[in-house]
Image 1 (cartoon, rainbow, N blue to C red):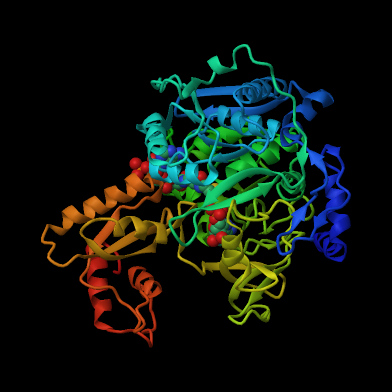
Image 2 (image 1 turned 135 degrees about the vertical axis):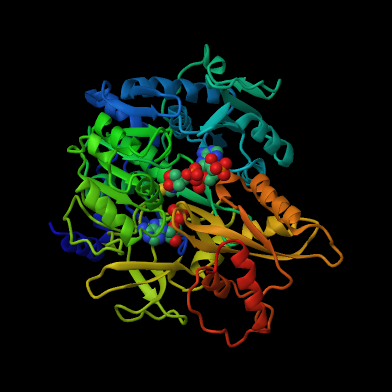
Length: 629
Ligand code: COA
Ligand code: AMP
């Protein structure tokens, strides 16, 4: 079948389409139907089925006689080590950890926070939770203690599983003090913490609270898989919204297994047994879906890569891993290739490796700029497919259905809507616009299996953030268009979310941190274009009357404050003091105009601006930072 036929078959009869896709999953009790719309607009999938995510990701491959196949390859150029774990070994590890968690009181529905770097034990912790029906919430290692504390208070975990340290090039990330700081700051206290001690650093355990990863598994019974309802939350993953309070995206078990399995062949074009690599981090949605669950549920070998595209040790790392482990399908963020291209523009490193086993490269997480796509295509000689999705959806909204049909690539477009997604471009009044016209990108409800049914403990916020603006639709927060051929084009965010090196960050969250500085009366954070990271945050602060300290001192404190409160991942290094912020007459800060000035783009003077002269002051301030040329 061609893509068009597959998409039409979904559109004509979505129920049959998703019931058929569900056949690929081993259910303890088959669901009677796919869509449950009785609580619309809170849609659910496969709710009356019973299933276990860990069984589908691990045990069933062992039961099918594939226990000796490698499930996980941990490739760590940072520690110069490669470890392989078979499906049979993975089953033993996960059953043992799950048994130990249960012995300490973790039951179905309890939350477990996982704060770990790129080690296979992070996947084992996720799968151990899934095995006993506990709901995991992985927190990215680049977040500071405060961000972890916010997540502890929202998810209220019974247990936190953390590693002793993470390893960034030239720097050990000491997880234990961050964990301790977060538990101190949080109102909710976990019953216990499990600490995975890495060779590179042994953390001192807190008596009465911490248990050692290995010791606490000694003498406990391995746990069997607990069947859960199709709509049982598999995990909560926090993502940035407009304010500093992150949104707890809920992923329901049944739909996530079905959709991820479907995506592996139809989008990533791999067969069971093939090696699949997503170079991201378990702390992000790409890591949840395509380092952990999808490749394992589909019976692939997944790579857990602890390194960077450059500097670990050089710009040839990606190509070395692809050759050495025979990667068939590779997925990363465009920023990673921008980093490689900057170091190795002529592809000298690439020439040293045999990439003949690699079939295609997939990009997502941020806009894929044409230069980067073309360079990657030219250097590797492989198809490069951009695809567009979000933490909320968990899998591709628009992409290349390479396993169905390789459609022509239009550089700059992530290609076409996947089955399950009825993408509409809406004007301000919520009416669909003609092809080729810009507007807000919305998806007609219901969203397909695998997407968020709601936000954790925040139904109202879910409605307000995604459903209220365009009744009957899910609002993506992205703007763009669909052309005459049905290709989707993503142009910008419609909110204050920015994208830094493929990481989604809230400028509102950074503003809240800056506003807490005692000398700051008012502030604004904008995202400016950056050649390497796509966007970078820049902060403008207006000082409280009477403050008479060197501006450099204050901005350095602001930079430190954001690093301490949000974390190094915010990459907040540029801040400047200004007398005033440009505003409309009703007091709204003109952030979009400030971005245009910073990016040296033409802009139209906003008709509602209060005092146009302030824009010159903003330009001068930006020039001191090397922007607004
Ligand atoms: N734990 C602790 N700190 C982390 C971290 C982690 N897991 N990941 C990143 N950081 C730190 C970095 O060390 C850096 O700190 P620094 O300010 O002390 O240098 C900071 O957070 C910013 O990190 P990042 O934006 O990722 O930049 P980088 O300098 O580490 O390198 C590139 C990033 C440019 C190499 C980029 O191309 C890249 O590969 N980014 C990751 C892409 C990605 O996986 N995106 C996820 C969506 S698919
Ligand atoms: P995250 O939830 O962190 O995955 O970020 C999702 C957001 O990243 C989307 O809403 C887009 O703004 C942006 N994004 C992701 N993939 C793409 C893409 N292929 N092209 C353009 N923007 C993208």
